Image (cartoon, rainbow over the protein chains, first blue to last red):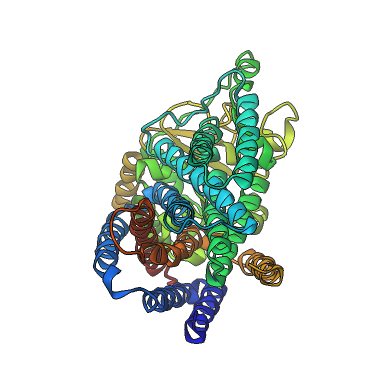
Length: 461
Length: 95
């Protein structure tokens, strides 16, 4: 490989690092993303220079097809559907690395009839494992998020022993592949186990744990690229792959910490199922209802408001009407902010993107640690489609499954209005004692419709 | 691959991972979604491997076909990932 091409890969790696660094600030983030894209472009051009002219036709055809699909999807996707898009794209990345690894394996064993070095064989096996697992795992995550299969945990007896046996089977087949590289049967066994494990490891994980799963699969897609870099002895794949791998791991940690759960606990799945019966006998909560007109009057008379958005806001598509509510409040010189819990939504930062799309300035979106002390001095908190992240049981009920999880102290505000479809429970399957608090009022109905009515009432005032 | 070459690759892996940890730990939660879709696009770097895998004459080998599948998928990842990230970041405004 010529020095010029190696240098081009180096420049690409530098641009990836700089691009990620610029993601640290909202102001520079867009430029950072473009620098990173430029790096990718340089890496692609440098690679194309090594390609024989005869293969160029089909290569360009593949690139055109891939670009068309990518552009179409990226421009069409709704912001509420971002978790689905990231999930399926993680899967594509995993499958791509998986295919490259297998392509290289068959090239060496069946076309060139050469023996493969130990390091390369191991890298191929690792890439097939991570890539395959990422592909089917992401597919299941996508189907769960998209509602094609149930978002609740799917568990069955002997689930974990089966996974363990499959994994040991994989290790055994991997061992024999190292001994006899040319046996295609062994490779097929490896492929099948990797794909099946991807499905089995994600199905027991519930919908609201998806932020963790997507972050982890994101990390895996980077690691798969990294393993492919070891197969091809290519530095830029290793650099870019490990950057993504590290990024996914950090996000995974942040999400787990925000739920006060260990990664193992999330991955074993089935959360929120066993606690239902224990909680069912507890004293039922008496709630106070509030109507649209009274809500509008309340808003009219306060001086500070904090909105706590949750996944329910995304489902109801209520973010735009909440901006109208904000405009009405700002007209009245009411201080208006948003409190964002790290795991609100179905992926890290999901609420921020939805609110940004609704044209809400990002300096109004406040993180949990910064805003928690402000609740006691706030007149009115409006909770839209959030539940577990404001449940005081996390602070004061050691029996609760969510005990210890950091929450937004919305209950400490003078008045709390909860906009909710019904009295249904949150993801954790626990009653929210906040709803029975004396300062809490329930505004039942579809978030978008009810808040629209509140806004029109306020306009007439 | 000589053991020296392997050691260098492992060096790159370890140092790049540490760099990644340092860089990402500073990203504010507001930008976590674009960060994910952006890093998703970067993991499309496997496109380099896909291109090399396609660089083979004839259509008869399974290697070539796998390379082409990988190329389409990696291109979707790269083009779609960067485009949607740009689309999102464009919306983040301060008034």
